[in-house]
Length: 166
Image (cartoon, rainbow, N blue to C red; front, side, top):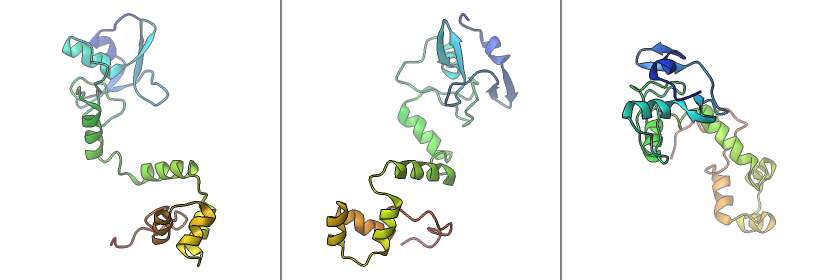
């Protein structure tokens, strides 16, 4: 496909308020994409480039102010830095959702050198910190943080962490 017109892109969307929700192809991460000249490109970048009359610089991002992943509307998009894009996402709560936090925590734990079983043993052990450190190779500060609940919070109890914070 040669460079599409704004109308051709709009025809592949459903309109919700100012948002144009993309109904065509998405990449593996779910971002609206289109093939132009044999290259896959993000639709939002293409639309923003058409509106501004020049391509979006490679180091710049084109997030949707509305927060909709499928929105490709020129009224919702903005060209900004990576930092500004993340700040906008944080302001709308993208990084504070409990399900997202749990997924990140579980992914990090799967890559940890210390198993959940070992962490559980450290919590219940009556050994002093120095002995645990020698046995496990863990730093004393990490052992103390595990025992106090600051690190590796127990996820098996759904009520854990709901109490008052110190």
